[in-house]
Image (cartoon, rainbow, N blue to C red):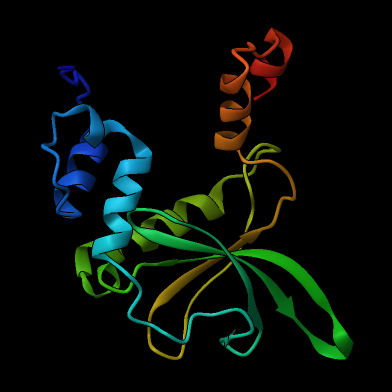
Length: 171
């Protein structure tokens, strides 16, 4: 039996808040995939209208759900404008069950505020922060086409290939 030595507060909190079957100190509680699965089960979207093609705030169209974490859903979306203008964006909003929690909403607002002040080539830019027709907050960020870090790491784990040092330092 392995005993987890992780003390990451976010893992313990996510495992607890998602009513995971595992104890917060078990190895499964520290596995991000397990935390994500537990959160999906507990916080399944009640908003059946979140689907490809849905327009939000009159100018954002959801295209494809990219991921669901313990606290939010991220969509590949498009900003729509006059004369057929279209720009790809990442659209993030809190899970509907959490969006009703004032403490969580305050954290989400703070995330948007802090992210909007950051300017670095390795950090996506925030384009907009707002509320939809249902009063739920959302964050619109720059869309970066490419491979996510989890897939990159998993691809290297499969063949037990180590990432070259110059690639690792660039990340």
